Amino acid sequence: MEGLIFMLPPFAACLTLIGLLGYFGIHVLKRGIIFIDIAMAQIATLGITFAYVLKIDPESFWTYPISLVFVLIAAYIFSTLKSKNPRMCIEAIIGISYAVATTAAVILIDKAAGSDEHIKEMLIGSILWVQWADILKSLLVFAAIGFIHYFFRDKFLPLSEDYETAIQKGINVRLWDFIFYLTLGIIVMHAVRIGGILIVFSFLIIPSGISALFSNKWFPRILSGWIIGTIVSIIGLYLSWKFDVPSGPAVVLFLGLFLVIAVIAKSTGVFKTSAVPIKNNMGTNSKGA
Amino acid sequence: MESILFLAAPITACFLLSGILGYFGNHILSRGVIFVDIAVAQVAALGTMIGILLGANEGSLFSSLFSLGFTLIIVSAFAISKFKHKEFSQEVIIGIIYCMALAGAMVMVDMVSGGSNFIQKTITGAVLWVTWKDILVIFLIFLIVFLFHLVFLKRFIKISQGNRDSFHPSELRLLELVFYISFGIVVVQSVKIGGIFMVFMYLIGPAAMTLFITENWKNRFILSWIFGFGGSIIGLVISFIYNFPNGPAIVCTLGLMLIIIPLFSNNKKQSSLVSHKMD
Image (cartoon, rainbow over all chains, first blue to last red; front, side, top):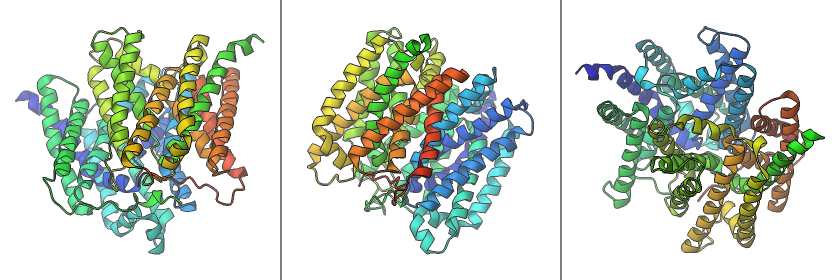
């Protein structure tokens, strides 16, 4: 019983993460920007490294705003490039920024010895040692961002559905695209701190991937993402505690198992739902000439 | 003079890597499977760890063959799966393969002695310490892959352009199998020398630069080789002068070039970085 109380903070952290990542995952899939979170996490880390080179204590207040500025610049670049050419494959730009951010951090670290341990820790994270204070802080930030997205849902949702249709509808695509990337970047910064990049990545794409198999409506997909995330977190954390394996990977592997079951269920036709027929192509950024 | 001799082997390695990866990069970019090489590298790392757990010595021939075999099985499964969905794109499948392989490696990392050190190595690479023997091995492997691709070149380009329906389904699968298996072999060999990020940048960076200039496939291949190799030379010189780690210096140089080149391109259809993805 005592052990289960010990698992309470990681469980709360998982629920906090799935709350918003389950929703953002649908955006990410519809836009085809699968690796955005890994890139954003690395860009934020580059900010932390940069602060370290400026001799700012990693635990001090200033690290956060500096890291935020880097995320802001990335959000600006992504949204501007997309507005210049709506057909641009943003995933390629994301990939390139990921590679440059990671290696630039390596160059900076090389110049400021001793910081690599701290950055490694930031990247890997450990949901098992998560603090209530961190969970609470993230919860507040997530609630604020969730509210913004709910309030402006008539901007964000069409934008991810189809960029060019959103332009025709008269949405200020560049502005809302920028806000989308910025909010996603802020979420990733917090989420990685409490869950580690592996959990964030899988919570973002796997639940929304499973629901994409059965529906393309937003609300049922968000709801099913939450249910899947909760069940998997309970089973994964319990088993990791019982068999003493790292909790993050355990949850992720369980999520993968869930996905396999869903794909089998889908292909054997257990669920006959309003599945989407394969349309000509995949959303906004792929209408090749 | 001595320094030039010292850099001769790394420069040759960069020449070979930028050549073959620049070629593959144009396919990868047009197919919209940007992160496929990172997933392949992660699967290979997982394969090596499983091999070590089964009793192979790190660096032994058995260990690398086991890892390669493991990788090729996963890659083949990916290539022949005809799973098609509007949102569930190939890139999503790549993402899932990547995080499953990473999770598997993290579960196993405590069981393998020196496991975390091993992961570190695949990130930074060691192009400066490449030996002439390594170069001969990759030269032969790349040559075989290149000859294979020469035979199927027209068909591979057609698939990358998105004209998948013009093939018989079984022919398409066979072509996909050949393409991804050869790609898997090249990535596993290249990552050993250059590390994940250099390989990634060689693939995507030069291919993206050429799209600002031309859409002709032959010119794309030639230009991406020139850009890739040119960027490597500049990067190596910078890393040599300022004493930076060389892999990261090359990656950042190529990143800078990608910002500068579009400024000077006067292509009307500028920045047609459009992916054709699967249909």
